[in-house]
Length: 180
Image (cartoon, rainbow, N blue to C red; front, side):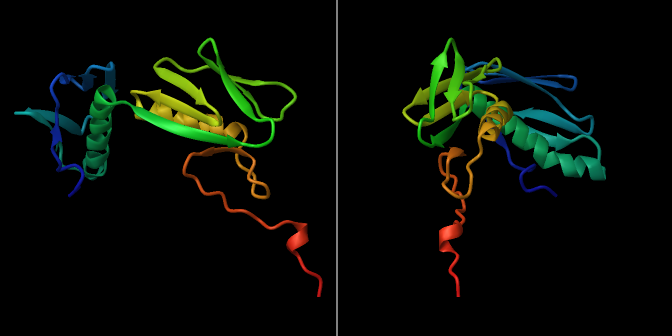
């Protein structure tokens, strides 16, 4: 049995969950999110919240029970609070700016790198920090990962784009190798 799947999802004031067949729609102050359920999983509305239940007893439904509950909980948190990821860039001459909603970065390439946000994503730049925010947790994480993949941190000097609390393992260069 899934320990996560058994947990109840409380709904705050102003959040509504509508289930129409296999389509779940969550509405809140920040926006609307929809998700299609697996046929083996169902949601049950209870007083003050939502519970995830298995529609059929099968190995597949047992595996998806906790996942579907976590996805619904992320949708509820997204429309209520929202999600954000912070990236930090390090390197001489590295800088970023916002140009018409798109993120423009100078990362040591011969040309500036321009990243346009998908719908529902907002970029903010402060000094050497890029903040990606939105209501869809999966989309925020995917956009942050794709921006980091443009110039990942290298292990010798640590230059590149990293998550704000990421620790980059540094390698010693040629100078550290001693001759004996």
